[in-house]
Figure 1 (cartoon, rainbow, N blue to C red):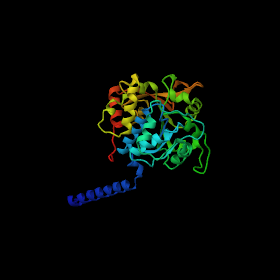
Figure 2 (figure 1 turned 135 degrees about the vertical axis):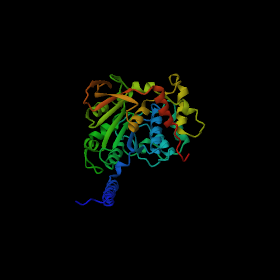
Figure 3 (figure 1 turned 45 degrees about the vertical axis):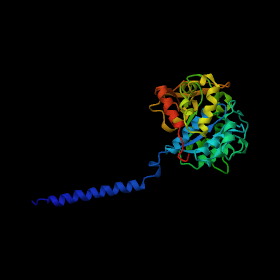
Figure 4 (figure 1 turned 120 degrees about the vertical axis):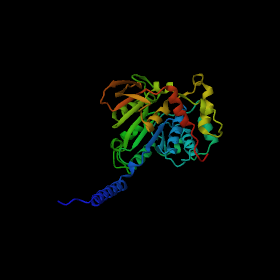
Length: 342
């Protein structure tokens, strides 16, 4: 019997280790790009006018894009008011993204401005290219073009306004932009819809009832998971007071809250943060912030909503978990973000 030299045994082990290292390196080199790119791809659909929490939500998303947590693909209005397009463009431009696609509905849609005159203040005081909402491309065209260009199941749609555009998208047919129907396009490209809509488990809420026909259609036919953040969530979460105390001047986010908060006694503790919670969920998810209830949202013809519990349901609504004051600070910290070029 011959003994095996420890030297040769060690060389065999060493060669095997080298082989394993080479295999791991090869697998890493061949891994798909999406494994190292964790940015959430977002389309933001907003009414951007009747209330100013939309401004906070869009500022939140731009902060997330600056920190490489999100990529904003498009900013789309569901509101036809002529100052909405310029207002969105002001925010996109100030945050260093003047070329972000912006769209608005060409079909009949809600037309609501700002009673507190923050939209005209933005247009009068900050750079923007879009001169009117009616000059924007059709929201449906922007949706179809943007979605078709993205990888499958990669896009999170965030809607904080009326469901007008999403109903039009679902009902659209193949066209020169994309050979898929709208519903098939959503099924293929969208990962999740986050919607600031409804009261839970039942009630009536502005975004749903302003275009109840669209709301009924979307929430019945949307083919992916929907996460709802309801009226009752944002009502408790107040933001804006620290924002308006910032020393920085010529900040459109600060200006909007500075103008609006003193105009309403109910905003004395800060503005209700309905839309910002939808932006938060889109980027961070619900874990640690909210618990969820699974089921199915139902919408009545008058725009009120109900809820049917179902553990297997594709709809969920959120219930507050993180202490409200802590969440308010978390959101407002991101609303206060200043891009480096400023």
